[in-house]
Length: 409
Image (cartoon, rainbow, N blue to C red; front, side):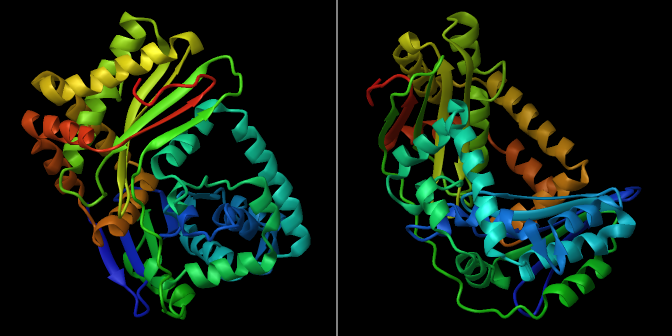
């Protein structure tokens, strides 16, 4: 990696990683703000604002924004998560300035027309309705509610119909003004770029953003519990979760490897035993997520409703046993999978830009590819088992759709 980091006077961070021989570039604005920052009664506002800025910004309407980026063969998009919102573009190297200028327009000079807002609410309500009909997506929101109760981190990113309808254009404008503080923003660029040019563009486009009091985000505390949705679907979907690690915990690589070995691929214990040996499920996998203040380890599964209890009981047992007898070969296979995924992603310009932004948001610095690989290679079987064992000392959360499951299942 040839990555470099620069901080503007107002606190905004610029990270660049040029790639020799690349013809294209990826550039994005990553904000450390998401749905968990919303106030009660305005759930879904972060996602709504992400949509609304594309309806008109910088003197362009929605069509003109789309034509501007597509006239040069590029793409411009955005996404919202519980702890992050990102606006990102992919263009040829000569058009990086255009792309970053469009992103600046989106977050700094959106139109926020009330008529457009009401129309966009209908689009998002349609998206929400679609999500409600997809249990493999909905189960994740139910599981977050089971893990965190009524805490802000538990709120669904899409929000709910009453809160979406309640939002006003003034709410959207205030969200950008109050939450998009320069100290929370990272501009990341990779590929066919000149780092000095990117810094100069960032200074011109964002250097006048006023720093200020960064809003406090309510801390997340894993409490555990149950959330059951009895609606009928063709299959039962369930998930269980245990408290994991915050993103900066040095044991995260060990937990990641444990997770991969237990449920990260076709060779994993969960896949082999639940699907291949018992025929209890088509889809089953494990995953872990770390935030600044909390973390989780979870298993999700889709199965026949009559077999849901049996499948969950077996999955719980598999996770517990792996913490005792995870083998060297399983660890080595998991390490090869994660390391290969990391290296492959770093061969792409969007992958490098995303890596820059995430490492800065979590650690406040650029974590090199070499450092990330070294951390993976330093994990031994004892450390991976210990990471798995630590999951079993706290509360458990269970969520289901189509089959009510006991917490002790």
